[in-house]
Image (tube, rainbow, N blue to C red):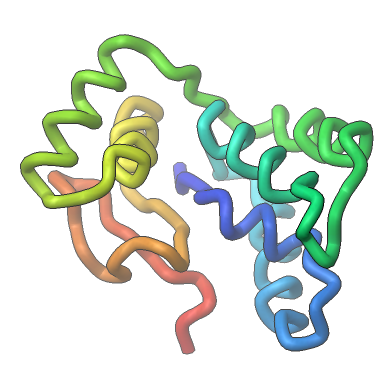
Length: 136
């Protein structure tokens, strides 16, 4: 299982001509069957995709419809255990709480990889390795 960070979802909806290659990579990734994400990722997607200043702003209904399609993947809910683990990982690895929550959600789902452009590609966080799918 591979865990998908929010930026993958956002690139998949991007209409920015400068992001065409990343959008194509994201679209292809989202066709895979071995993906997982978390409630946090879905929340972040919704907030970013519907914000008023976004050039590619989605309506609430459009964003919800996409979220519904991504529920076919494993989705980790936020639990007290994940919050605790994220706080510990945040301190251990010097990450923001939010990045640590991504790592710990991936771990809870049994994912060995987090697909993300935002975290340090190649770094392993206690057995969960970050892979930047956009790196050449």
